[in-house]
Each structure stands twice: as C-alpha cells, then as structure tokens.
Length: 207
Image (cartoon, rainbow, N blue to C red):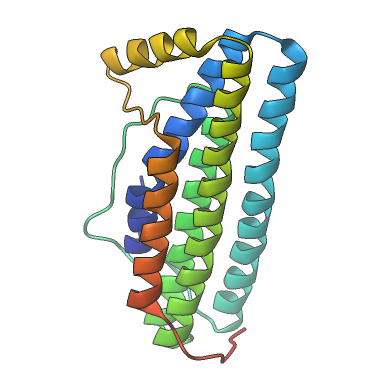
C-alpha cells in the first residue's frame, strides 16, 4: 500500500516498466541458463537498487530527526491510499517493491513537515523532484539491462525461445512490456513533462 500522492504517481509512471523489465531479465537468464552469467546480471540489478535504498534510509533518518527536533509527532492520514497486487517472482522485484515502500515512508515524513509548517512548498517540491529523478534514472538503467539481456539471447540464438516465453507469460495474465525503446522513450517523456510541471526555483535548505 502506498499513501502519499507522490509515491502513487511514481508507481503509476515507473513501476510497471521496471517490474516488467525484471520479469524479462529473469526469463532471459533462465533461457540462457549459465549460472555465472545469471549471478552476474542479478548482482548488477541488485547493485542498482541497493544504493538508492540506502540513500532513502538515510533520508528517512534525517527527516525523522528534523520532525523530532521540532516536537512534531504522528503522520498525516491519507483518504485515498493506493493498494496494489504484486507477484514477487525474484529477489530483485522484492528489492524494488521495498524501495517503493521506503520512498512512501520518506514522502509521508515530508508531508508531515510541510503540514506542520516546518518546510515550505518549494522545498517540498524540490525533495519530491529529487527522488523522482532518482527513480527515473534507476528505471532507465534497469530497462537498459533488459536490452542487454535481449542482445545476449540473440547472440546465443535464443530469440525465438525468449519470445515464446514472453508470450506464455502474457497469456497467463502477466502485465508484460517487451519493447525496450518504447519504455525508455516513455520514461524520458514523463521526465520532461514533470520538469515543466514542477521546476522548483528555490535553493533554500531546511534541516
């Protein structure tokens, strides 16, 4: 469950593309079937997600200290939380889901500080923008890894097997995108639109 409007927006814009890419990376690795290659790619994916998770944990700690230093307690109540059914098919999908939940925790703290008049509107927007760019960059890199996995499968003559496996997943109801260029283009277009929407101009700091 995601509570903040910001986290729901990020989920709607990036989650499907990233999880779809992770599904396909796992599928392609299984078809290629070489243990060393599988471990190398899985470690690369985890290596992209983990630093972002650790930075979010540090941000949560910083925001909690700012909240406590100002004598604020509790969190806002949200009238329309987002509830999502997610099938965890790999440790990397689990990592990304955990990342989204931690982002929601951070944004709830940002909302708390904003509602308590501890941070101004522009700094709230700055913080949201910073993390949206971080997730956008992460999504782009994971999708690019899927593209690399496709190339590896083609080089090994496994293209038909990959396409058959992808269609089988779709037939089972898995919400799957297989168009790397399309996903990357949509992410870039979303980023440009968000820049025009938000464009926070203040450079003031808080905390």
